[in-house]
Image (cartoon, rainbow, N blue to C red):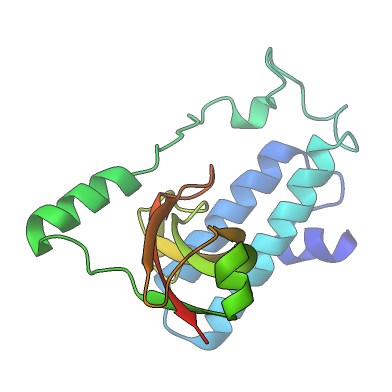
Length: 198
């Protein structure tokens, strides 16, 4: 912890308000010098120190120093407003469809079955990639003024998802199955499967 206080230029008995003030001032100076790798590293180091010291206060080590407000918030953050931006994935999808036309057709996955499996039916494990809204930036592609590191500024990503495809009995070679996969954590995704009987 001493190293964290030293990085922020603070005494070890500094309270949460002083930690916050020092971090903001040093981060503001670093951001004005952006572009240099050393500056980026120093900013990351300052952020780690700030997170560690503020977590220490929130978890109780500094509870006697930082007076609590109703609702459990520290007085050092009383002047801040919590903003929870909603996900804009549905809006982005509608805008994309309006500007670019309908989405590209889903790729076709081929499932190979034996004649016996096609005759009697079978369950086949199937891996699909589902498009989802980035949970860090909520689909905006940025966190405050910086591009989101989790999604590289795109606001979306792909998640692997495994499901069991139930192939009905009597399926024929060349049959194409189309269905939507809609887990609670991602938007509905169209999946197309072509059955190949060998």
